[in-house]
Amino acid sequence: MTTGKFITFEGGEGGGKSTQLALLAKALEDAGIEVLTTREPGGTPGAEDIRNLLVRGTVDRWPPVAEVLLHFAARVDHVEKSILPALESGVWVLCDRFTDSTLAYQGGGHGLGLQRIQALKEDILGDFQPDLTLILDVPVEEGLARAFGRAGTEDRYERMDLGFHTRIRDTFLTIAEAEPGRCAVVDATGTVDDVQRQICAAVSHRLGADLKTAGK
Ligand code: TMP
Image (cartoon, rainbow, N blue to C red; front, side, top):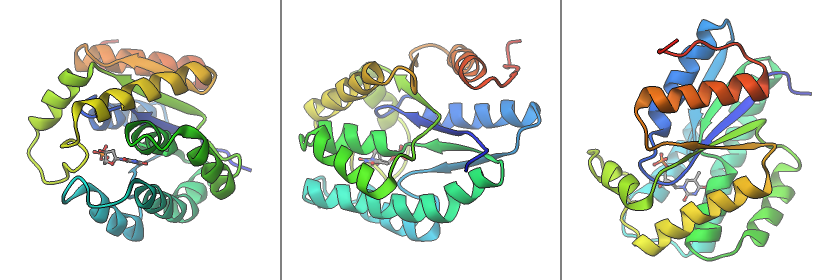
């Protein structure tokens, strides 16, 4: 039985997930809720090692199916060693990306289709899923421009073509439409404060937390 809430942040490149995740963590902590912030791929030492294999190097470094398996290998380690123990002790977990990213990037972007990845997800994770998934949505060109503006070498996916990124956005929106009870689409084109207000409203409304945003 889990007692903490599991919130995932999803979306294409340059949607501001990391900034918004940190702001939500602060708002929850201010409301007296204990929070663990984490990310995928990554979140445990083993999963961070796998992350390095995935986010660096040439765009064609891995066949798409190998990418799926690497993402799930990292995810199992992360769920078993970090996410579940935290939730079971009552901590709320905020995770930057989760299985919806595999559906969007490998299923949609690489064209593997959603069914095989859903099947793998059910086989590996059973019915474990986020209580709330916030999908930060920005037009593809705008997101990529923001992402390329950041310094860093973890840019293997950012360097993939525009069609890849367009399919990712479309897949996230398809997932949100199919699962409105779990997913909330957030318009991430506004200011940091605008986006934070939308996120705090969604968390308050759907999970019953009483949150104060910077602008309140
Ligand atoms: P980040 O840039 O949000 O930290 O994520 C690292 C990259 O990994 C990002 O470009 C999306 C990609 N990714 C996938 O392709 N599939 C997945 O399942 C996950 C979790 C991330």
